[in-house]
Image (tube, rainbow, N blue to C red; front, top):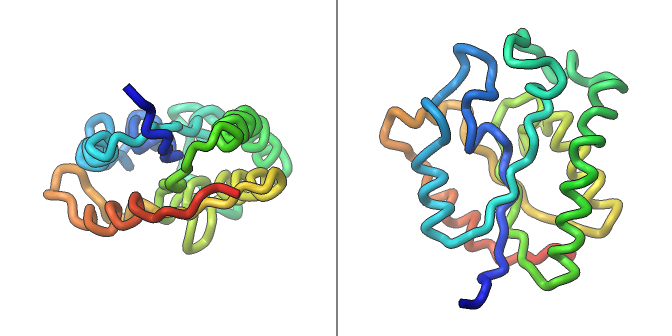
Length: 166
């Protein structure tokens, strides 16, 4: 069987809502509808480590982007991301298509679009440093797995975006 050679980079909590702040989870485990759709597209998944969980643990208090914007937290994020970027470089060198990054809207770390979170800022900076560019799509802030998820059409348009990493 031949490899499809298409990958999607996703924020940790898309596959593991146990990593989010207690009381802020929006699914019992993963965002099942989103994950099922990714699997139905036969995309490989690169799950980013959760920077907040690894920095402050499960019982961390809610913090803002400004509170996370410290030299220590940025250093922590880069340390987590360097092996991921090395992995992406290897995939690029072997002709893989990176479909994009899936972040979390309004996350102080993992928002990739409106006001990019600290982690996504660091990831995009490291990717730029090695000549890799990708698009970002965020899971909407009001997305709840318990409701029939809306917006999967937008997500599917994101998957079909054919921009390659450069």
